[in-house]
Length: 163
Image 1 (tube, rainbow, N blue to C red):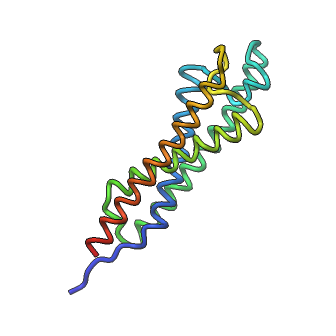
Image 2 (cartoon, helix red, strand yellow; image 1 turned 90 degrees about the vertical axis):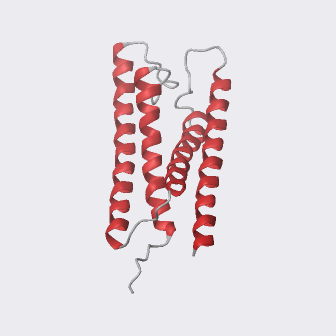
Image 3 (cartoon, rainbow, N blue to C red; image 1 turned 135 degrees about the vertical axis):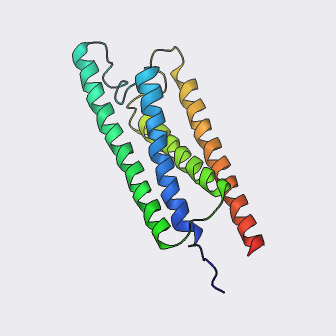
C-alpha cells in the first residue's frame, strides 16, 4: 500500500509567510495610505501639502506597492512549487499562522525601518502624538508575530503527535 507523503513544513511555512508579508504590505498601502490617508511612503520627509509633493509621495507609494506585489507573487510561486512536489500540509493553523507571521514581519520591519530608522513616515501624520500611533503599530506587529508563531507551533505539535 502506497501512502502519500507530504513535504517538510519549512518550505511551506516560508512560502506562506512571504505571501503574508506581501499581503500585510497591501493592507498597509490600501488602508493606511489610500483609504484613510494617514500617511504616504515619505510623508514625514516630504509632507503631501501641494500637488507636486502629493505626486512624489504617490510615486513612492507605487514603488512600495510594486515591492509588496512582487513579494506576494514570489510567495505564490514558491507555494505552487511545493504543491507540485507533494501534498501540502493539511493544517489551517499552519496556513493562518504562517500568514500572520508574514504580516507581523512586514509590520515589524515597517515600524523599525520606516517609522524609526529612516523616519519616512509615521502611522498617522496629522495627529498631536504621532509616537503613540507608532508604538501601537509596533505592538500590533509583535502580537501578530506571537500569534502566528503559536499557531505554527500548535500545528507542528499536532502533526508530530499523529506521526
